[in-house]
Length: 88
Image (tube, rainbow, N blue to C red):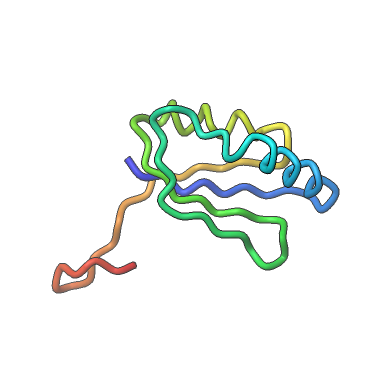
């Protein structure tokens, strides 16, 4: 299953987020493969596309960052155009 994780945080949380990421990395649990990661240019929003064995693995990862900002996850599917070509 693929999920889009959207994390948002307040400016004062940026220092702690950066520190934790440098010290502990992504902290992704077993069963999660990161397919892509983006930061909004405003610095307060992160988008992570993952492949997860289960929605529980996705939830476990969000929980590890839950004390810093808000984490939302969406189960997503790839979209194809009318000819069956994948749009990405």
